[in-house]
Amino acid sequence: CALLLMLVVMCAGPVGPSSELGTTLVLVIDQSQSMPTSLMAHKSRLLAEANSQGSENDRLGVIRFGAIPLVEQYPDPTRPPQTGLGTKNNAEKSNLHAAIDAALELIPERSSGRILVVSDGQSDDELSNELSARLRRRGIPVDFELYPPDNQPGSGDIAIESVAAATELNAGEELQLRFQIAAEVPVSRSLHIR
Image 1: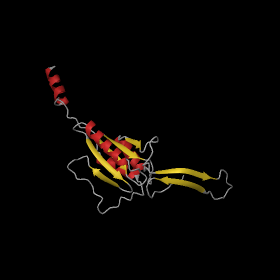
Image 2: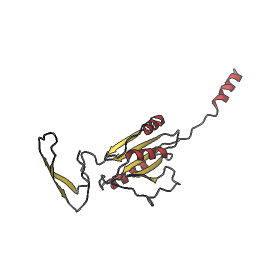
Image 3: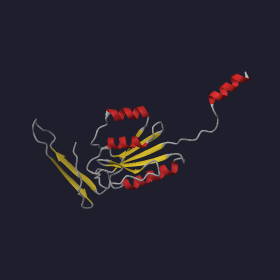
Image 4: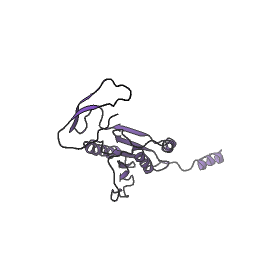
């Protein structure tokens, strides 16, 4: 019995408190042209919350993106952020899935992690089968926060006051829209009609 007990203890290995591995949270922030300027204040709140609620073993990464993703903060605090020097963020595009791919790269293999995307949902690229498979295989959840929320206005400086169009069209006729836009300050924005 003593020999059997000794073999069981040897196979089990040392018993003691295991070190907490922590988790990696990567914030993916859409900074394309379609996002309102109020996003910066919201981003600061998210960073403050993540830093105050995480344990000492948790890691935080931050990626901002337009056409290309740039790492503003690596989960490893000793690694300096990427700079935009020599690259053009191209705010007219929003490559959301490329940014999620970059965020997945910041989470170490065999480590728990989570990706939080803050965006208006507009994307110029598509979710590839390869990225989808990698997310499933790794078990990394991707949470999405719509910004601005549906119940919150955007930057407040631009409003579409009216849109008028014909209610009936014959096949092949051209659809003509008349719309009026009001702005508090002189600005330039794109108008997408779907």
